[in-house]
Length: 208
Image (cartoon, rainbow, N blue to C red):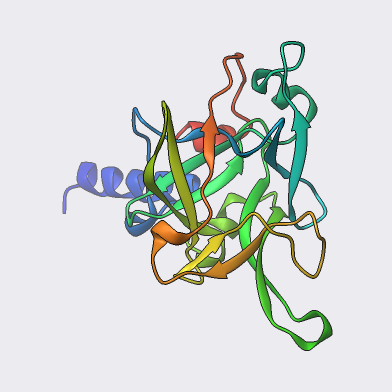
């Protein structure tokens, strides 16, 4: 092998280590990526999904009117999510403006009854998240409501288990994952893309 070829191969290897990506788990950016605030109607309020550092995802009811719109939410809540699609069709879900807040599938057995829930992991290292099914989800478009697309969110760790509009044993305001035979039967969410100019919080993902 020529020295130039060795240098090229070594450079590719070093770059792959630096980015922390494997061929089977590369993140794919697309023009129609899902990025925004996940919510469902609870008129006259909207119930949004909100990440916290308390290890669980919360449902927060917010009054939306002429004075306070969905575009205002990212200023007050960790509610602006971005999906990072992988080569296998799964997605990692992270707070867009933060560097380390990732969603994951959690399990608990409070009072002896096992259940699954959507949690929030504060992880400083992308390599700890990448490739681990506990952080993977599948987002399915299942219909429309007027001009809004409807989505259901399935666990990558527990296929067939979906985000619901209900709490769980750790908190009544959390997001429990329940099993559904058909994805169309799972609780549905809408996505609002904020119109503000927000900066992505993780330079490592931006560089991929």
